[in-house]
Image (cartoon, rainbow, N blue to C red; front, side, top):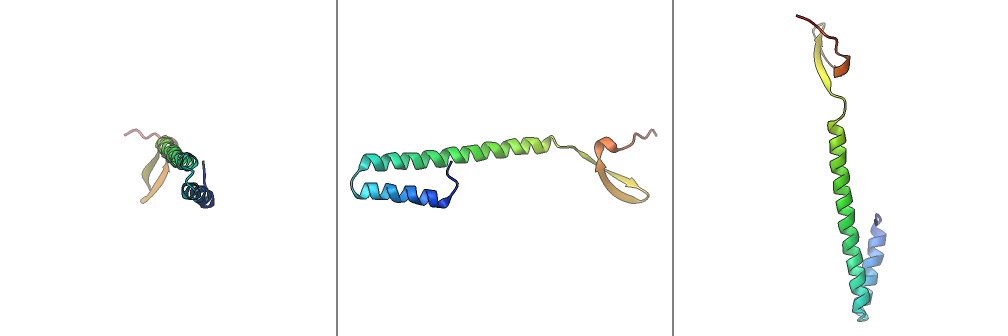
Length: 84
């Protein structure tokens, strides 16, 4: 995956130059490579973000408790069991 803007600029320049000298096959191949790279990069970033959201949902939950008149947020598994 291309991450640098400079790499995209070089590929686009090569594509424009190929079309300018009427080498349509090479220009078309470069255009296809650029489009494929952008598409695959976007798809990977999208999937990675979805996986991160799923991992965040699995993170340790917390509980808000009132102790000595003050509200505190503590990890849920640390909260003591109270029978009323």
